Length: 388
Image (cartoon, rainbow, N blue to C red; front, side):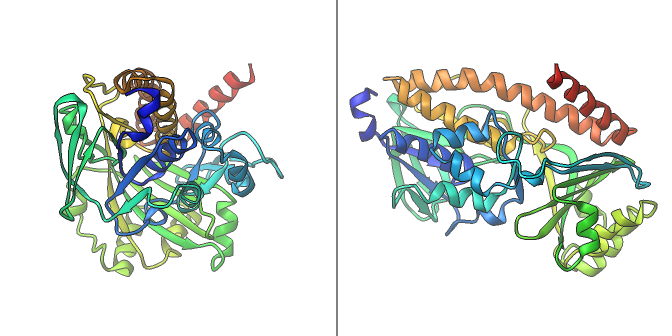
């Protein structure tokens, strides 16, 4: 692929989440066209996650490359960096309050849907094709791939990038590694902060972590005024099927969930009591830490497709966006597509492996013995390092 004909190559991005959108937008800024194939019939990013903290050295770096950093800073919630840490008795170990009026640095919050709207608004019309669920990808000579979709369409791609998440359809073309159960199961609840001012005051403007007994109540205020709550359990993979909780009957499900936190402080249990009638169970999966694959022409992965990890390093969307920026810039800088992919993959393996190890270590710490004081000690150590 030469510099002069990059714009004539068909670059297919599978998946229209933050990573895929960021990749397409940065390429577009450099005059290179890519097409995003999204399985949903319309944009569903607002339903796929809550508030995201966007880090300076990854997510914000990518937004800068996309020409959106100032617009992001104007709408991001810097107060969302508030953080409170408890054990089950309600003893507080950390109560961090974000600086009033801060407008730069740190890890400001933004809702996933708002972030994706920001990325999509500058994409050229027709960049995203909705209703394209990939069913099969076939590698051809020369690095080209035939992409087959469940709507009956077939697309020939010169370069295909998997931004298609935990259970990527493209990953098997590169590695036999599959996403494995992490040992954690979550149950997502929602509390209306406006309708529950006492709970909103307890939660403050950002996150609450309550950790004990190999379980957790994790809560996060979103920009829409809802507090997303994640009840987190160390459990066998089939626990959701065998626990007997009727997740499709919210009132009964919440009563049974309360029994798992019977001796926890009442303000923590109130996250369950005051939640709306929507109960969403999910298992947490991860790829092997440090996953790499043998390079193959015309194909690579970004985000969860490349390095799925638990959410306990706060790196998921940030790494996806950094991957997108690193890959886009490699494509811009290299005349040969294979050289671009190899340069990107070599760099990505290094930083994603470090984050995956942190995520795995944090999972073990947060859902082990004496989790709250140990997490406080870890934060103290990190703060001391940054202060040096």
